[in-house]
Length: 356
Image (cartoon, rainbow, N blue to C red; front, side, top):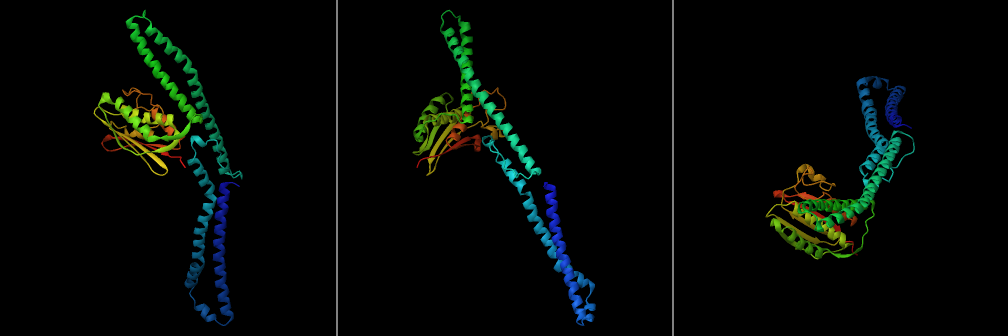
């Protein structure tokens, strides 16, 4: 049955019931007056004003009918529109990770059932597109690794060749740097493709995260020395969790590298680590310049740089925070970005301990 016909029948049923109530009360009034007349109360019956009779019918028959129509109509409409609410909830919950889960169908062939079928078909096409994109990225990354490795080795040989002129050697060195940068990007794309497909290899064990944070402080002190950035470990509570030590170290290095790159001379970086019964929280805060307001909601998007253009003076591929978020997600954690006062930027990593 079509949705329009179903709603029409619901309202028709409510209206009919309301009319039955009014008719019943009118019949009751008529019967009462007839009984009074038969029992000799004709004078009393005639003395009753028609206005009073109308008021009684409206009060005792019309008002309940109206209330029934409002309440009943609301209940019936809620029932009739419940499939729309369920479909809306299903649409709101749809993400890239659950495209393979179809929306439940009623099977009655109405408009909503057909809409659910169309939506399921659309989810299948989207899922296939995402799968093809991941496979293309993964395969392309693997295919590019070999020629880049060969090119890298050839350029190194040309630089080390004593017969190469000095002017050519400078150009070759510049080319080698670009090849190295391209190799890094290809490796990062391969990592993200594997993460999206759930193919990341992980070696889980008990990780002392506070040790990794202390190592990170030493690394950042060296990386930030040229800019005279002060690195401070505000708090570093002992924190144990279940995870992949190598991946977690990679995650912390990405966050630290981001704090150095998006900083200014004589700036500061503050690190903080604490743990409760179920969760480990790591925060890294650095001075500005802050990311533009229009880009803050997109900070974890791939290839997003410090500004809207790719001509930023900040080195990097724009894939670091995307990789960091993937590693956090693989550990059932989360990564949050926030701009504090004085253009300070804070990244908060929350990870479940996973220990029993």
